[in-house]
Image (tube, rainbow, N blue to C red; front, side, top):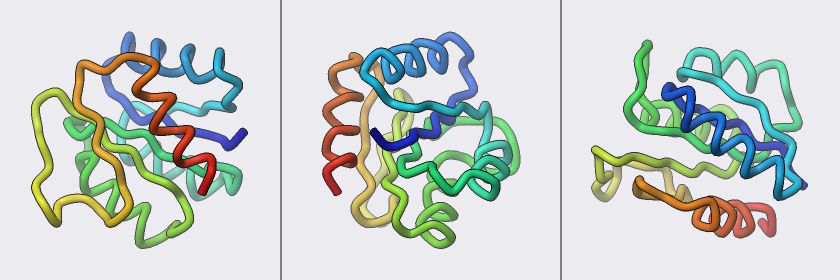
Amino acid sequence: MPKVLVVEDEFLIMMWVEDALRDAGYSVVTASNADEAIDILEGDTEVRIVFTDIDMPGSMDGLRLAAVVRDRWPPVYIIVASGKHRPVAGEMPSEAVFLPKPYLSVDILTALNVAARR
């Protein structure tokens, strides 16, 4: 199973997503903002999927993080989630998937299973 980087500033949501992914057999690392996520990606070549919230504190939001990931780590699959923001055409990298909140663990796993088959 591919390694997933979960980027979420809401601790309880991050832990819930992490638990759901680990229960499904994924290896998971977490970050609470985009800066931490980039540090992890720079040091961990095994990350194959980034699952990021849009609205986060720090130097960039999840959409900007998705663009950086696409530019610097093109093979990494990107899933973007938000309950407040609905990306419009051109805001997300091509092939990135948007997952609206609230989501169920089955929604996350469905998106990740698609990514795992790439």
